[in-house]
Amino acid sequence: MVDGLDYKNIAEKLYVSPHTLRNHISNIYNKLHVTRKAQAIKPATKNNIV
Figure 1 (cartoon, rainbow, N blue to C red):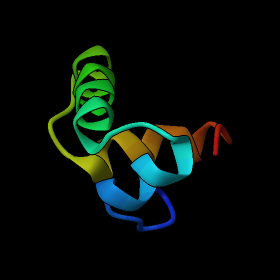
Figure 2: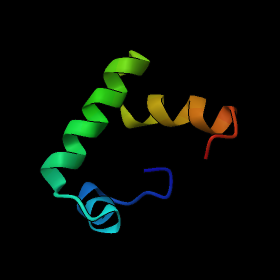
Figure 3: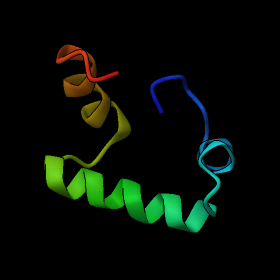
């Protein structure tokens, strides 16, 4: 996501279906209490996770 890839390309790189990826990303958003990609990426880059 940080590299600007769409869900289809990310799913291909991770060898999962786009539907599975969307579910995982949805779970990440819920745990971070965010609703958008930019909101999820900001803390990850700030804390040198990515």
